[in-house]
Length: 333
Image 1 (cartoon, helix red, strand yellow):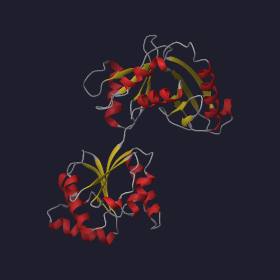
Image 2: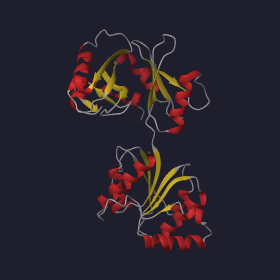
Image 3: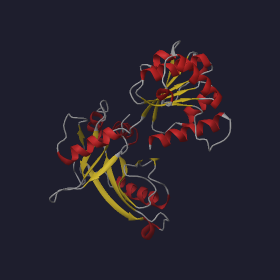
Image 4: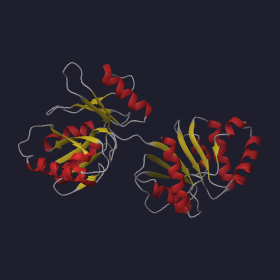
């Protein structure tokens, strides 16, 4: 779900919402550009880093909500914080926050804009009060000038979620951000103890999980929202349908099944990561069998086993899951 669709739903449930967004961050700061939280009269969701900065932001947003009746459409306000001098925080950096008031007036527009996530889009707005939100097309579909180039760069690299673009010749700055956060496609083969622990650990992290097993009873009764459970008698065939650049983690109950999946992934190529749970001995045995199946040494170099960070020791499923998640985050960076 895009953040615009989420705001539209929250307006329907709670009334006016203020979105607080970090649009500039210099030096040591609690969160990065694009970090945002939602403030309503009843609840605060997400975080821009906690501490005194967030306390001040919530207080300002609450005051804006109190003045929401009669406010003009697309109402925005800004505050800058030198974290050390003004808030007494040890970070010592500088943060510029944008406060955007959304009410029932904008709800329908937010709903319509919020559906533009496939193909992925960028949302831009001029950093001035009253300027409406706009959708920038992805790829080569449009977006001229520096704003279009910046938006395209965000979409292609996946390394930056938001960007503040300086205005030219007296024009206001423009803030561009993804409509939905970038996520990596992750195929997880196996719903055993480690697989279940890993899915729990990855909740809230930038991964969309296709969770595969041959036995539906191994999955929890309700799969979490960031994972789609898929039961199939042929996981290797499913591996061949993965999108380019996907991450593959192989940890089924069966070594022959693991081998078939690794064979399929190596054969199709165009993947970001292929990890096999097990020891160095298991990797040596798998490499021998995969050579016999026709794979080259160059291909086998992309088979990672053991998986996880070697500095994190322990064989409990939760420890292994944390180690794997840490390695995947390092890989994304």
